[in-house]
Length: 554
Image 1 (cartoon, one colour):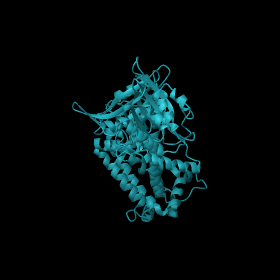
Image 2: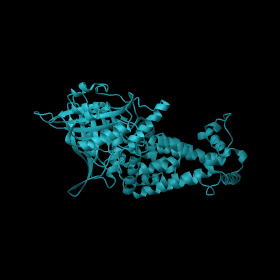
Image 3: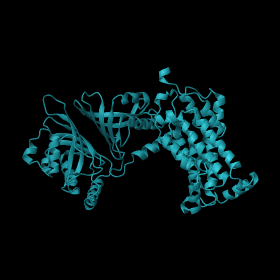
């Protein structure tokens, strides 16, 4: 079952430059650090939901000195019973380094969900190829073979002499010599193409299946072998297990989304006894969607309180950006010129630098609106003190640094989903400063952060009350500010953001204390100040909280 202790053992098997292809996702994951974060996110999703007792069952394997191909399925363990999960069969191809001590690449495919697409996938591939040929765009230039396969132009005599029957089968098929291709199979063979709901048993069924595929695909299509591992299983006969990684080409141009893996066994007569084929998902890959959905569901199931920021985010996005009549002013879809001019002017006066220096391009904006705006931004920037909330050992669905940056532009639109999707600290998650990224260690842990942003926020209050004397005394500017807010979507949304920040500024405090070796019952006064005193409490916390320990001092 997936546990973080087991995952630590997995990570020790990975090469630093590993290339991991999960065909449910569009892009490969390169590098041990990136793969570690990806796998931890998947493990956290599994540990928090009803599938935390999932296991991966290896069904078969072929291997040599530095290549391994396995077939597997997923199952759940309930009491002492193991139950197979439907539509979970997969094949994985591993390559190892020279001394077979580390995994350098992984390629993984899983069968499509039911109902199976059958020949529909082949028809889609044929139609897509015609479009690609017309436009000249779309061929996958990244696919290169890593194990030489025999040329598809080989003669029948040369093919017949090939030692491995699986390679011979691929070559016969590419020549559309279906009789010779069928001769590669044992009479009682079983061929499981996971695009179809049932296996094909016997050469009669295989003959019909091969001819159907040939009819669906143009003769310019060929299956090219990228890598192969052959493992003899008998010293006295030609029995073997064969794992193959392949892709489809059209006139020697690799087609996108046509990679796959196959696993075969051969009998004593060097004929294919069983075969398992799984191609990668075509066009629509739902790996990221599935990961996000399962992770969020599991986190909400484990902590139903996360529904509060989720519901508030949905309401916030609708009310602030799309509603009419709830907040004053025009919604974002109307692209009101006055709104964009106000956003521009406030941005030019960011942190009040331009008006304080009396720069010539500094626009005149209502001082109370400027004060609220800069108070909000300094408050948002204060969340940088929690950059340690993400590390290599604790990835989040939404990265924390881009979230903090995004909060400078769309405030609660970034904060709320981060609170919903972030990973919790574990009970034994004491963190050392060496574990942090440079931005988190230098910026997030800086003792200057709290005083500096507290000063900006305090100055914003004073600016709103005293700056720009042409706006009158406190009573006059308060009245004019109210009049402005009555027609201004931007300004009124700032007040909504201030309320949200006040409600949620303490959500990250308990885990931050845990990282420093303290529990919620420790430092009670500082914790309560940070959680319940808006803005200034958070500034005080960043000033007074204990520093992260250093491994050098342990």
